[in-house]
Length: 345
Picture 1 (cartoon, one colour):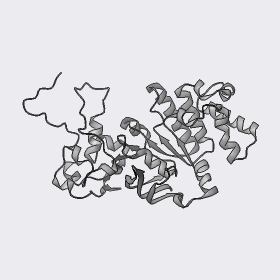
Picture 2 (picture 1 turned 180 degrees about the vertical axis):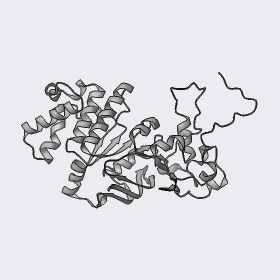
Picture 3 (picture 1 turned 180 degrees about the horizontal axis):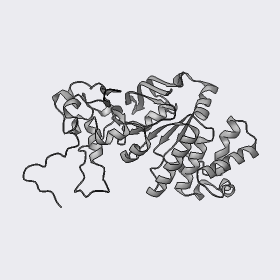
């Protein structure tokens, strides 16, 4: 497959309280055309900052090193019309809170047709027809009436469908989906994701999908990257990540996930609290919360290790854990209860 997006050594620093603070540190990955890559991790891990950097939506004063390449073009070198085309035609963003990204005093029809009329120079009548076709494609009935409505007149699920319609209007080659189902109930989440996946297949788009939900990432994404403190902790196929995690942080996230098909006691929780890249200690950023941490884990930032290789019988992946070779297969085993402590039934 052809590589569409390539991120190499991406480091981002933002001005915080008068100082530049690191929020992303040496993030690298690639995404092929038509494929879906997931970014998972706790709040503050750098998921949204990654996609905002790819879309050139960083605040003033941000310092960026590394490179982002889209279909061979260096994204940070784009200026003027080339940058506008990149944002409006090549890449589309779907935000997690549709109400925050739609103008409350403009009608849905204006929101959907703005890009078509501005970028494609489409006449108003043709843009309206295209917008109504898109509304039908995302499962919204009575499109003529919806075009006349304002955002506050639509439910969260309907408004998120409008966001999807707006994102695919120009048939972009890459969708950046920043937790597009977070504010929706479970049933609506499933409907919205079904629409998004169907349109992705029909239009042949690649997708970078951000979520807190490991189960959803496993169902939607071909591969998953686990981020912590602005760093890549693990990268491997989504189907294997759940049954054979390569990093203790991934294993802890998997164990903390409830399962409806079996009865269990209290879910294991990850001790401590998430940390940002600029708050991370020396050595492995996850070491203070890791039950497998040893002195070696605190001696310098661990490199990303390649585990296995295509064609070797062990496809493996990437992990930032120096103890992974000895820990593999043990990380999902429950931690022994302290002697003398009883577990409540």
